[in-house]
Length: 111
Length: 111
Image (cartoon, rainbow over all chains, first blue to last red; front, side, top):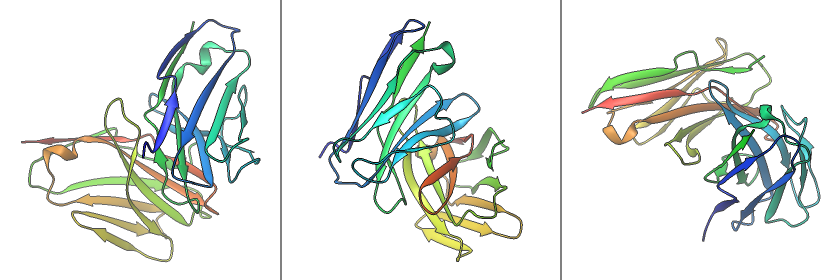
């Protein structure tokens, strides 16, 4: 039982490049979330999903897209990376929208 | 504008004493509150939660208090242990969909 896993753990991009972050959970959770953590800002919700095939915007969705084609996977895409997207990204999953189980994070640097 | 605020970036406490971490919120629609603990290079882990219909919830050494009129919640850790040293985030939600996190308080428990 791996819980919530994130791929990759680290990545360096150049401005304008694209990439996809993968989140996978093996707990059969309906709800999945993508957050970013920046110094002094706590965690901010980017996008979330309340079930397979559904997605919704969070606090800071601009510049990101997501997909939830399978219940266990939640993908976060950056189409054209910008230095402002340098951050640590956390994925989380949960049931009933209550407590969330977080992955270990992906540290992304955009040069 | 942050809807959930943790105004103390850090707190230092002696082992065995009480740690009190504070959190304020602005949105009166929030009906569910949580505390998470985060160690470096790991994702946050759920600690304790409270519904807005209660004013106190206790789990072992951890107690969360909610004062709805003041829009304030606090986490008490008694007795504090060196292993409690971590960053603590409070979070709030309504309708269990979107979660709003504070910026975190770094707790240092000195042996």
